[in-house]
Length: 380
Ligand code: PMP
Image (cartoon, rainbow, N blue to C red; front, top):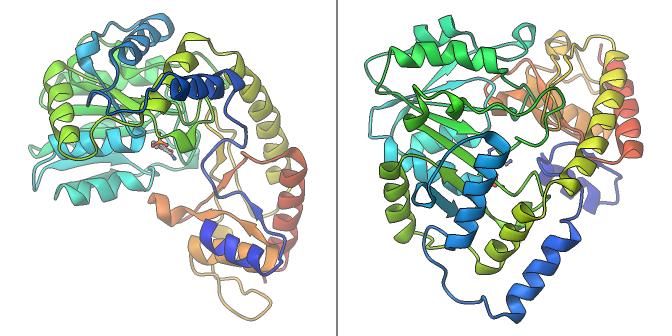
């Protein structure tokens, strides 16, 4: 959708993009300065495969101070973004035929990574009524002797849902009965949480050793282009990730790593500033979405997405007589007639929804939602 939106924009059409999953802020100045200094200090050579020791120590400190979690630097592997970390972990854990349990909606790449490892994705469906969160009963029902990994994000992309400590505790009770299942906990949106402090499933001692935390710098510090992420896991998994990475990409960009240290050491002021803007926009978009007939939304607790239900528009016709059959048709219609780029929920495993990112200016959001209301009102 982003690509199609750019094509329309190249034709001179004013397209507002609500399809991209990245903060619309600049990387904080102190982080950029650290990268400039890294260049001047000649941090320009190959770095250790799992990352510079002082960056891994900064990650250990962060996990201790912010999350109350104890890790040793041998348990941290830095990579070229949370995406590579996820891919490393899936490739090291999943053998052909292994089942990976994924709640829907999920971030697009999860199931594709499982396919690359020749594993099988097993989906647990959720909907807006449950705020897109699974229950312990649903988890139990999805487990088979072939289950190898459970994989989820909280805060979630694409729904913004956040699991509370109690909700995680209920899932942990199920995992305690199934000691062979690993848990990939994607916490990349950790700092964009509007309800509570972030809760990691790794805080539960009974499962910590089989939790693989995925995190990174992209969303919290508006550093999507720097490609810097990491895992925190047990030593065996960390070592396997190190080995795999050693034969594929090697250590990630030396300059980005030096900047990452400063990002973690200098605290979260820039993150709070960004979060304040997201909180304001979340309320703005919520009010505007609630003003659109036929569409149903919840108020997401984290990340910067809405995932409204749009199935009441299925079967309706656009002004050219084309029938809207699914969420992709609706997203295409909104792009071609409303000139707003969104993403159909089918990309995330739930067809009755579309995803809107509110990482855009207040003015663009107001105009985009006006266009959306207008375009949806023209479907008959
Ligand atoms: N996990 C989720 C849920 C994401 O949304 C994204 C980025 N869109 C990533 C991981 C990848 O993050 P990174 O840019 O650090 O590779």
